[in-house]
Image (cartoon, one colour):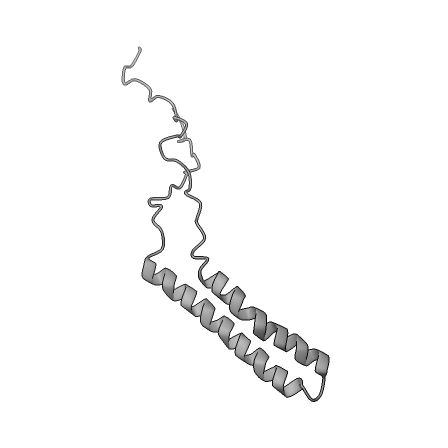
Length: 105
């Protein structure tokens, strides 16, 4: 008999649904906040620079410098987004039964 093995696509399961560690989460939030505050500082400096040249642009930078602290705090306190839990390993379709070991001659 020339029977080739049936090749099935294997399904990959997630082995854990653990969250990101608290120290890693805090580090990411601190980095986002620091970047946002750097942008706020740049907006303030640019507002001062453009105040005597292009007044409307200076007001845009002032608005950025005023609104960024609020959005930075909200984003920093937002935390980590939840990842999808993945497939349920206990709710899978069975592959079927194995053939019996008996030989019928």
